[in-house]
Image (cartoon, rainbow, N blue to C red; front, side):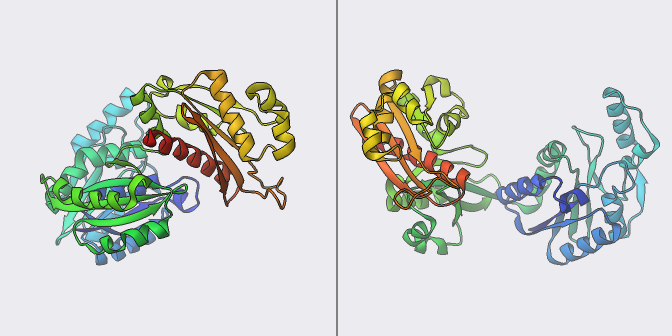
Length: 414
């Protein structure tokens, strides 16, 4: 089954809100075995909505709309769907009562225009709204279908999962199961080169996506509803791991949240070990990324933002001779920062960052983007020189990613 998403709302076109609905629906359609070719966004204009519906249904078996189900005059999505199929709008008494009951529960007056939310194209499959006052519906005609969902993300997601997803499973008879592998330390071009022959399979399929200095490899297998895709996915995953080695730092399924920070944190917790950080150019981002992960208190002891040379010396014990001979942006300084943080905190491991994040402050010898990351642990300290490109935030983000990866590799080697 081929579907398209039609997002209705002038506020989307004007950039007043982000279209997170389309992102969510796209991901779920893929998991449900529904092929998606296009997203379309159109303003609250009846003629343009009808035109967009006509164009989408000329290509797809099903169109999923979001938005335009409210009580105001410019909320016309259901009406335009009805007009497109030549179906009159009819009142559904059960939906009207549900709207009244919800308005009463939230302490709002039921005005006349709320009644329009209980009108639907004749013969529509009505989808009640458990989180709001705007029910959705599915209209079928001549092998085509339009599913009309509300725009507020909370309402849309609930309606999709409770009602539209079962409909789509039944209609498609297929299911797509995906497995994601996170890769760090091997760029997208090299990753593609190493895996090139694996992209030509039809089922399962392999695709790459770029992130903050990392690559995500998605393995997807199409199976019949209820069938286990693991026997199809596992051999391809094993071959990718064989080729990329330790560059693959995590594997996970849809809906899971994984990062280098969370991966390192899990490794530390499993070993009963702890970590601290001494940061200059990243200004607390290392510790912040770790604390963003659930369970961080089991491994994260403390963090130090030592932006000035005086702070590096006073808090971490960086030697004045080191700063005079090599400067704050140096491997020597990164090493002493990590060693000092570990010594002062008593942590098993310590990370450090020092560099020139820009946009100014660089010199010919130490240009913007030069960063040193360090790690100190039971088996000594090590620093790594990085030459990063991008704006200030991007350089700082990449510095954190490289620091976490440096620690990850040290943990793997022990």
